[in-house]
Length: 415
Figure 1 (cartoon, one colour):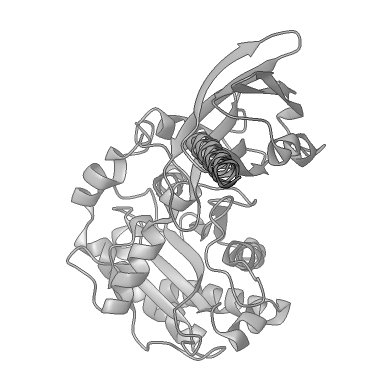
Figure 2 (cartoon, rainbow, N blue to C red):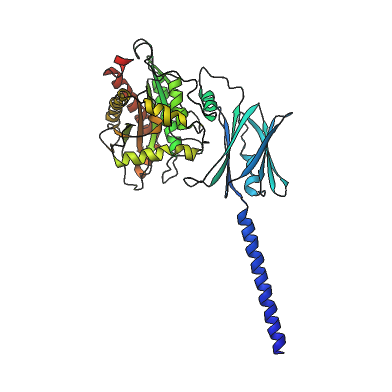
């Protein structure tokens, strides 16, 4: 009897050990295979982006089929899950490029996406490493092959040049513009609502997203500028779309802008921080630790929003070397005019224009400023940013700064 009890206990121990080993192997096997944790679709008139976020980097193959026009993407070593199954429901009827998206388990180790198209497109796929709360991402950008609208908005052509690694290919040379702005020709203003698409920017306690607020302010300012008899206005983005920093600058140069205004809503680790700020470019280091911190966080937008490694040589090498002292000085003068007007509608975080190496301010021949309208991380200022009243006040303040800058001479002497 004791021997039988001993053998019985031994069998139970072995069975338990075997079960634990199988469970361990199962967990290891599961962990070794990537699984998709989120899918997002960002349609726009310029291009549509699909993002698949996963536990590990995804391996993929793509090809195209006709009749109807389709892009097929096979994702390897992945199992179909509830997240992937729901991707088709994220396609909107008004998407200009995708008619529908189907997904299925093509074989034991491959998930297949079939994207049915409304027109001929050029797909651009790349992967991104984890950054700022995002895990691994597979990005699928769908660009129309026949761009159109080049004269009104060169954004698509600039994005295509950027993806080829040569965004400066068709830009005009850095030189004086014909005629005096505001006298012999209209003043050309480029508004740059920060962030967009995958890059939400800062998010307030009550879930207000920076990318939404600054777009609303920019649209208000655009409307005001259009009412001026001697001004023309363009936007780097007028939708919830991600635009690389270099392309924003390139678009301003393509449109021969006289001024570039990047609009943001600041955030800080302490909710006590408050007030409006204005920044200009520095080519010799930041003028404060806060400006250095902000420039670093804003320059991370490309990593968060998602760009492949192409196009880097444009600003990082060519334009940075060409930044002119005169342009920076003009930016400081312009920034002071805007800051003075902002101080009439909101507390000022600093009473002088701060400087740092903001990538989006690096056009060599365009006075450029970055306006931090308020701290979205401050609860009371987040509430203000959500109101149409404050948004309108900010827009009117920036316009007043533009008008004062040119009324006081601005850059007329050298344009």
